[in-house]
Image (cartoon, rainbow, N blue to C red):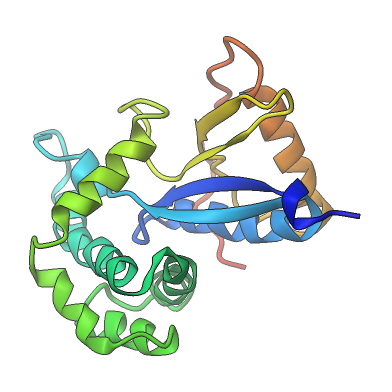
Length: 211
């Protein structure tokens, strides 16, 4: 029998505009059902990560400019109502951005806040830098575990020997469900816990499938 004390915490850093992080976050919710692990959510930012780069496409540059809004709102919500609201608000934002294909704008953010039982006035945070210091600190904590040459998500958890391990990804589509999700978790922790292991990678041949 799994007790609360025997469950591990998986710290998960996300940017809600990233479709691949969204896929991985839904996988983590599957993992929680079958393995003794609970997810603790943190904000990171692709807009912060890519600051100062001049090799970006116009499309990506515009996406990053708009990307400040949702992470600022998430940061403001956590400051006002506690970190416990990050998971539910992320779910509401991600469902709208990715599954429903709604635009990243104030209307969508307000709808997500309402669905998460949070004050819609928090949407005002999207247009101010008042929360950027806290946002940058959260981002730095996550990216500092894995290095600057990756993106979102970042996951950190105690490995089999008790040592903390952190990694980017996994990048996967569609979201594994049931025992497939649990097997992927077991394998990811196994390789991430191997001293000196850094990378498994292959070319993506499909985009994110929000099934």
